[in-house]
Length: 120
Image (tube, rainbow, N blue to C red; front, side):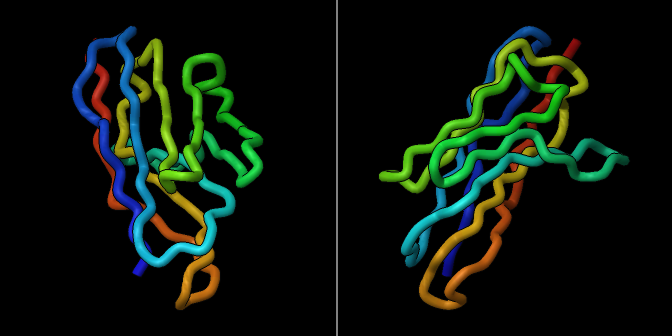
């Protein structure tokens, strides 16, 4: 059973920083694309950043220059370094990953989310 667990969320003042982690556990053969998404109250879930298995990255325009996504394939872990946080970054942040596993052979998984709150 593959599981994604996020951590690192919390309350921070505007201008501050947080680092989110997403650990993928279970019987894993390999992990392909991974990504961070967020959902603010009353809004749709949106993509924040993603990283391919080869390390290529993409960012939402709203976080470019402030957020950095990375991964450690040896640890099956993805990170999101968030700097210069703004109140509008307040949301639940979710980890997503395409995982090759035992059963099913290939599937997309979501974590349970971690709350990030930025105070003004």
